[in-house]
Image 1 (spheres, helix red, strand yellow):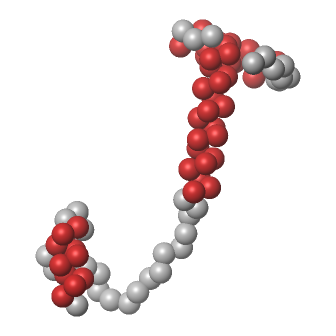
Image 2 (cartoon, rainbow, N blue to C red; image 1 turned 180 degrees about the vertical axis):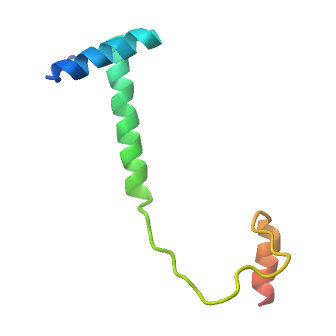
Length: 79
């Protein structure tokens, strides 16, 4: 599909330089830039930053390895 868009002349010049430097066409460069921007925005929308609850305590129990989900689940079931 062919679509015309108006770009700032400085932005267009920079895009042409980057496209040439990476060995792709201007169209391919612009398409990929738009894809990356849309993808980044979708990720931000899916996972907005949230405030996590804070609980009182002294931190992790001795011997708890958060990288071992099986041990964490066992510990949770025990309490």
